[in-house]
Image (spheres, each protein chain N blue to C red):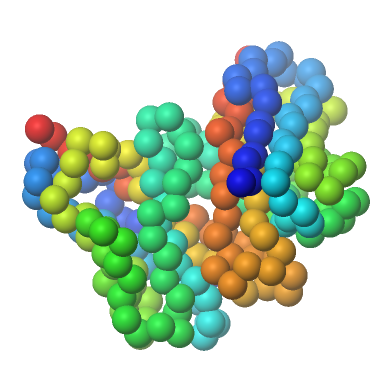
Length: 114
Length: 116
């Protein structure tokens, strides 16, 4: 069966510090991968998605970036965090050729920028 | 651009009763998917139910059913026989049919509280 992992589960970082959040998927190949952010009291906003190694599409301009160094690994990064980067970050995957196009979400990372 | 609107920030229902959560969306596309996701206090997003736009029949999953009105662009979720475990944030989501990848657009959510 497929599983998706995210770490760390929680993170507290000072403004201006770097960020690296990791997401890995097990039990599948060639998944589509997604990074979402959920700000307090708001819905999920798609940040990045990837259809393959090294292929990243950005949905919103921001000081975050994403990378996919391996087929089942998706990394969210920042060189200098802003207060507005605080939120709950969710990674998700979907099968490349799934007729139902369901996305499966990881447990999330709660990021607090102070 | 597609948008999803959930006009009820909070709802409450007594255990064993029925509650309906509203969702409307805007799109010019004819083929798409609609979803309801549940996010309990654990924050794990769980798919509740999905609907294909080309299907006229409303989707049903046990106590959960939808009222899909394509012309009105409405997609409400009905929870029957509410249980305490149904307490969660509920997100309506729209999926556009893109080439090689499909992006979910979420509403802002409805917080449902089930009371004993």
